[in-house]
Image (cartoon, rainbow, N blue to C red; front, side, top):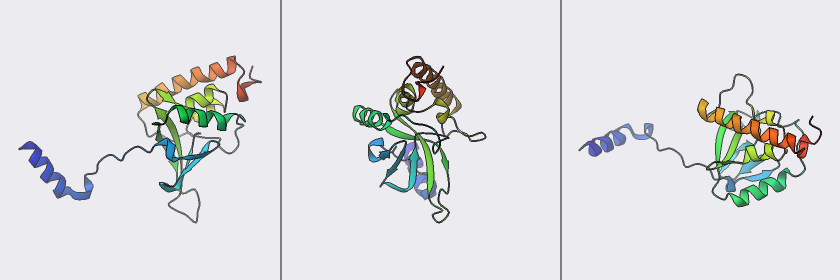
Length: 164
């Protein structure tokens, strides 16, 4: 009886009741460095950095590391963290979305920092912008990020070669 009432309510409310969209598989994204695009979301540009994406130094190994990680994690999905919209004035539907690429406990963004592909600060959101994930999940990410940055610094990897 209760299930029937819920079904009737869902039909009556129509489009206001929506199922959660399926997460986008990271394998649908074509990566060019830390930027990506997908035919399934034609007006979006995905970015593996929250800030500094046009001016931050990156390691020349980054494309190989992304490709290798993606091969090892074929079920990885994009987790949208924050968006800037519109990106192009003539295309108001365009947006740049900072994403995490995750597969269970594995996170490509953290691995890229761990390998010295770019500085950990690129993973921070601009002041005043809130992440699309809860505060506990974001804080756990920041903690893992600090550990990854320390590893890259200790081992003088990528852009951290000259880090003191």
